[in-house]
Length: 470
Image (cartoon, rainbow, N blue to C red; front, side):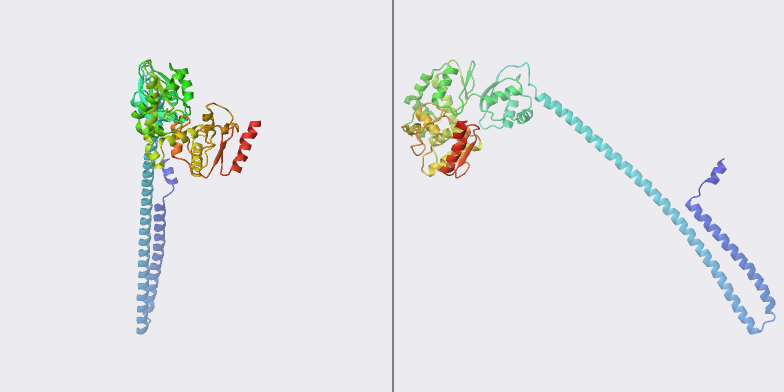
């Protein structure tokens, strides 16, 4: 059976080549042998016939014989040379075939090694990414939970003016209120929370992130909290009359006592002595209703049993002083007084609009001041009337008051309410424009601007009068 398989095996290229050469060699040798026999026979015949040749014929015959012998020898040499060349070529081809096979095997081994290395690298990367993802998930999940559910002890935390959400997050982490400042920062961004307020806060490690965020939006106190302290918030844009209402409702103080203190020159001089830069221009103002109007910063303030009304008011004045000190370079660059800045800011605060609208409205007021025409703000009429009305009549525009900015050119006596820092910044950083008028849609609150009185009247008819009839 083995012999049969051996015989059935297909010969290799080398074996086929060698067999072909051997066969060719045998055939050529057979031909040469036959030629040799024939040559010998011919030689005998020639020797027999040479006996009858002349000397000259014998010489020619000898030369011919030598030539024939030489040619036959050359043929044999050519055959041997050809045979050796073919044999060497066969060996060379066999060597090249073996070399090519070896190279292919080596290349396959190298490719296999590279594939293994790539597979290992990918596996390691996938493993690392998985580990990072799991770790990050648990880190975020832990950061969203209270630092210590059982610890309800209040900690006082101070958030400075102008703090970003990232800075607030770091302060809370350093104060050991939250686990991770980074998680809190991303949390408030994901929840689209903004407008966190500066001030002093009472917080505990047991608080949830949404509770902390709500506190920050509500606002901290202007002064450090004391034991047994309560809080009262003064909203942005409240005038002294409204602040009196709030104090009477939220604290132990009476509105009439508060208004009397606002009229007290001695108290104003005390505040002026403590905050000279802040109140210098206010001390020089004439025909003002309340000299501290505009200087009671809207924020959340602490009060406790032993606090006096004077102490409480001073918190608000001090807060305004802190804010205005940070804005001093911008105020000086505008060549304006605190009284002028706060007057325009009080108008911007109440005229409506947010963000860029406040800055555009501020520029409209600047344009009118430059043109030496009245500011014509409805807010000034309401303040002059000392009452709240939804709509102003033409008779109201004739009210005899230095605060009537429809009749009087310039800034007027002073602020008409207590503006926010945003409105103050809008006055110091207005958006340049050529508008002289603006009006707000009474239904949507959107503000429209115009350069001419005719354009303004058309907008009033469209967004105020028509809407009022609906």
